[in-house]
Image (cartoon, rainbow, N blue to C red; front, side):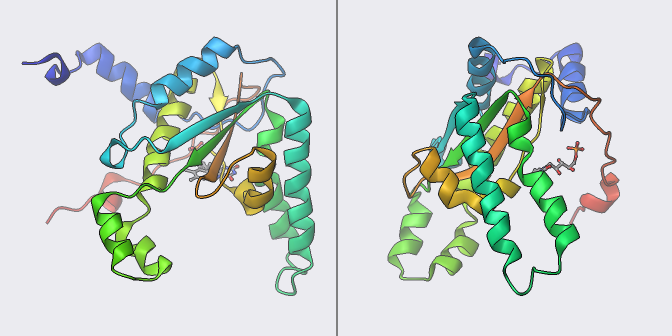
Length: 221
Ligand SMILES: Cc1cc2nc3c(=O)[nH]c(=O)nc-3n(C[C@H](O)[C@H](O)[C@H](O)COP(=O)(O)O)c2cc1C
């Protein structure tokens, strides 16, 4: 048996499952800087995630500069002001407030990790692109491997942060201001900002959300 095939001993497995099953999403953080070596460690583990064709299409920007975070916050607020002017959204004040609070979480933590993903031409994606289909069809047929790959890395990152005693929150809502945020972060197309992860020592116990029972999510054929 090669080392890669060695099963986890049960205590390792128990510890792994405890971290994964425990809720790690925190929305209030202690005002305490996250040391650079801790950031390097959590991102280092995240990069052991699988990716389509081992493309490793993810990139991470660790943001602790408060001026930059304030500029990002202003960009998200401005976007919500623009959205409020849309006829269909003018009366949706309650919904806008909830979404805005979710989108601004990144500014409430001492560390914000921006997650970037770059589309990668796998043989299948190249084939589909050459076939002349629309972008929409391409996305449906190829299922956005770069987003799936980035998601795998984000899950590992948040779980590792949790194992290190940090809280994190995976957020996509701020991407509503994606273009402006990408400018502030010097992100060039085709690379895209896909998530912001506020991270810090938790100032609250994470809410324990129930998961669906197995019989509702798993079927056998
Ligand atoms: C792809 C994705 C996007 C998310 N976006 C946001 C977000 O923008 N704002 C937020 O507050 N939480 C966000 N979350 C966190 C979820 O709301 C959270 O995981 C869910 O409420 C379950 O909570 P739990 O993980 O603590 O059990 C996101 C989670 C995922 C996986």
